[in-house]
Length: 421
Ligand SMILES: Nc1ncnc2c1ncn2[C@@H]1O[C@H](COP(=O)(O)OP(=O)(O)OP(=O)(O)O)[C@@H](O)[C@H]1O
Image (cartoon, rainbow, N blue to C red; front, side):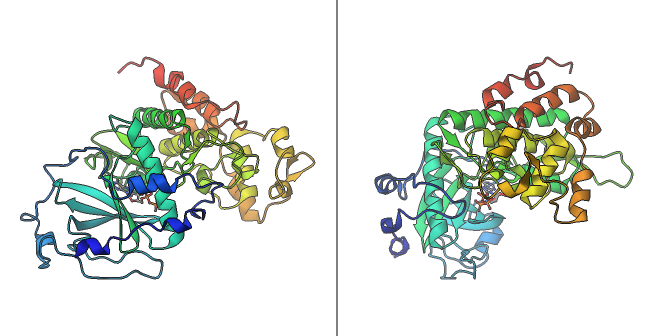
């Protein structure tokens, strides 16, 4: 019977830390997990009722002769522990696989038809490897904490259900649209209009203020982890010769996803967090980090939305710090002096060991071609540039304790000033 294939989460390994991003503590107690396991979460209606295919109307889903409610065939895992599937299979008797929506470090996200609720959902099928299973349990705990407080469901992606199936933790989410990154990519990295950036930045900061109020730090904010709620867009012509039409989202509503690295605020976080381009200086220098690391990421994201390109395109710590100095001015001496043992090699006589310590001429060139923040913004933004530059200086303040909080940023004139329409 199908139910026999649903295994229990092995509580015996609960003390082992997930390794997606190293963490200091295990935040989910076995008792909590026992309570949560396999339970439905909340009551959510379909986001796309009119688009959802029924089993009768979707040829893709019915063509393969998979009996309704049958267990899917055993397909095993690939070399990385990813669940192997075929479009049209049942994932479980309840969920039928419609398409693949994305893939990340944790696993794959599949678009599935929920026969019980009669709606499309997005299911993250976590790799069948212990460390990812453990990290997935943390993500579920975070999602449940967020869901409990976000009654309107407007801030963060909603978890609808989860289960442990054939050694894969499966997390069922409301189905959302494209990520900001995919949207930029499909527009050949042409920037968003400033008014859309304002809309997106405001919602992003509201989501972060909400998380920070709950004493949660996301730690992995990036355009890939911010999704438009609706998949719908319109195309408008771009008057530049030879350019393809520009996509514009029909609605600017967004939600934050991927809480696999989210952590409760505790003193003394010092391990490395965030995806490289969006990583704050205190993280790189090993000075310890907290809520302000999310705010730094927002600053990097807003620049990227205005310019179309990631602000700090680097894979190396010293080059990254040198890029920050080029765009934002010198790092404060007191921060450089406190650099931990890993980072002290980037500092000589109280200043950044640059360009002397550069790994190559190309690296020096990559840094020197970057523009100062105000010039970079003015190159892409016509109106509101002054307000935006001022806001960005507050979000990208080197000193974490002087950096704007999410609430302070929301009160900035970039968001509050009355504008002529
Ligand atoms: N609810 C959703 N609706 C639509 N698409 C989604 C949803 N959740 C995730 N996706 C898609 O799947 C991709 C991977 O999801 P997610 O970031 O949660 O996975 P991950 O393995 O934790 O990624 P990472 O490598 O960043 O840690 C996203 O970038 C997005 O394109």
